[in-house]
Image (cartoon, rainbow, N blue to C red; front, side, top):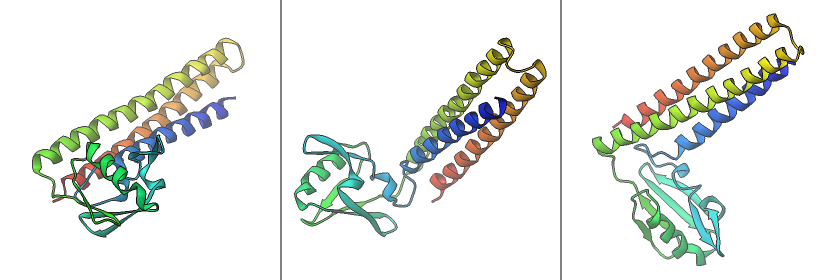
Length: 185
């Protein structure tokens, strides 16, 4: 009973970390990355569709993205979606593909991005702590219903706290790497 609860906690906490990593991959650094635009919703036949399903995205140069739509008819729609996004980039359409030139980040913009990263990190920490809180409650309910002993409860709570500390440490490591990436000139 206790082992399954700890296993569930680990799975849910790893899910929060995976979500954080995916979230942070979309935050711009000094280099061009397809992750910057691949999840961008594009209106395709009345449905918002992720850009990666409509086009191939490559990095021909360190500060440039090349978007080649599978269907040339979607070129204008993709261009509009990029303009409407909060990326602040101007697409260059050559009739067959779209090039996005990423200007170098200013010091002020880098600091803003670091703040965004810190907010996302805090959200991930809160998500991990919420998992801990929910499962602590479950463990206390098990003990209250005499499904586990008081000693088992104490041991499980310690185990859950160690797991939480390990996951938060992992989140902090991810944040430090991303911050270093952003501040790199």
